[in-house]
Image 1: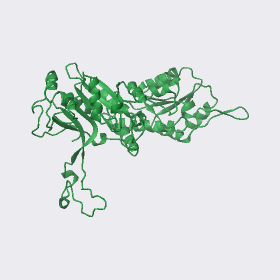
Image 2: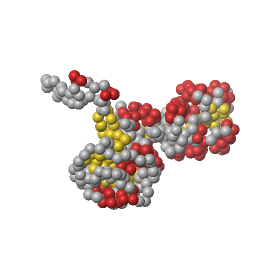
Image 3: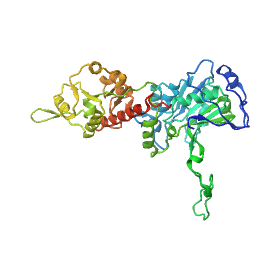
Image 4: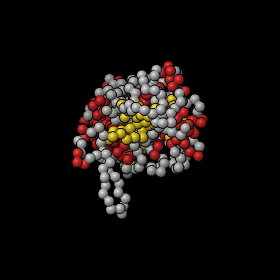
Length: 452
């Protein structure tokens, strides 16, 4: 029962139970008094749709201060080639459910990256940037500066597997069904036992089961736990000092989408999860048929070695050669390109089995020539580059990447930033990324990363 709103529970304050309220009467809902006594309720989900002028101003707000203690600058650390905040910003912006999407931060680099993704930035004060500051403190400060906002959707940057569909459904619950607050949960089938303090000699006791009648997983509904992905609440509730209250509902997310990053050990697990279950954008990705890779600075380190007799020599990483071979076995052609008229063209052709073109002045023109000759569209082309001259190709390719040491302009244009540097495994890393996403396309048969 993943991806569904919470079940109805009788009682409590807030708006009355009944048919979902239409968007046209939402302003009346927003002006209703939010009760102090919480109640848990449910709404049926609706298909996704864009925010319209008749709805209240619902703002997505991602809290991302620079002083993360668990993982330094965690909020912009690359996760699967994308800054962490980029995953949730992409989901929020693509959902079309918000009148505005914000980052609240105290850090210049976080602000810069947030703007690159299309978010607005609220520069939080030092008063709410301390280790002791709470999310509620920060949200209330945000509301003081933005009187136009009626509802805040506090989205956690550390939940990178969030999908636009989930956000659309939650906004519908607020607008059409009149909930004052909605928060995300995940269902778990775990038996809990009481903790025994060290040095105390006593027996533990079960918390949620009868050991004499242990249920099978299929015979037990499990329990709901907050997964921390998001907390939506109306202004009136937040101003009273609550993120959860009034007429309250939970939204159950899929287990595979419930990812939280707190400490270093969470990072590699989250990276594998987001590659398989994350949201990668609106565009439908076709299976890649062509990878174009810059030689200097991507396949090689960019260093040139000259022998005593004046011959030019370069080296490449065997791992990168394996990555190229893996792509070729899957039917992906790999073409190499260089601005230099290098004498090692024959080496790459014979050793790697790649089409090679050197002395290239117009890289985009060459890639266009290859693409048209193969009868491909740009959604079937991947590109790995590292210089200013690669930017246009990086922007056009459906999958684009740069090595870790690429120039800033290339990094900004790419959709994936490798952990590896040029000539030291970047090609292999990007090849594995391509193969993994191709696997997703084949298995899903529909929009990349979107839940059904």
